[in-house]
Length: 174
Image (cartoon, rainbow, N blue to C red; front, top):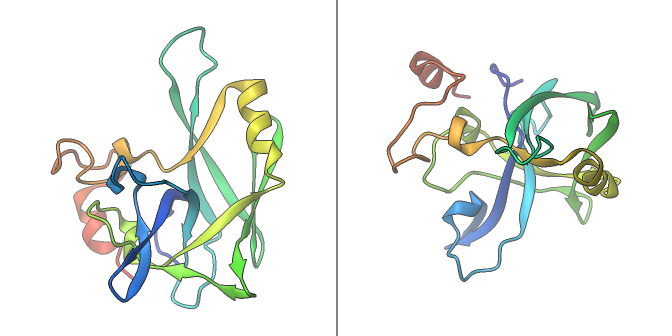
């Protein structure tokens, strides 16, 4: 079990020499294709945590800038996570390739306590709920708001995360 409440992140898989790993979409060249996925950190045995934080942008505010809202995504069974957002049940399932778990390390330049763990790809099931949330409520799923929770996101060395103290960063390793 991860000893802090981890986030679900929006990341992309990148190929580095001799390995694959996750990076932030902001770390991909603007001219490169970006295939963004949701990724959840797992413990050393590849198991999900009991609860994850999940941020959404809410654009349904009468032409005002979007607000960030946070939800708890909870473990429903060994490989399924659930959350209700704007009255709609959203289920995340682990995405496997050839019946094998695909977990990778974060290889990017940003810092977050979750990046000390391997991350597995998860996908909304059924996916049309993602579209329904936006069309009916102006909600866009982002996972973890990097401007608030990634060290190094602002001004490339920038702000500390808003939800964690510096001592939490040092004590949250695996």
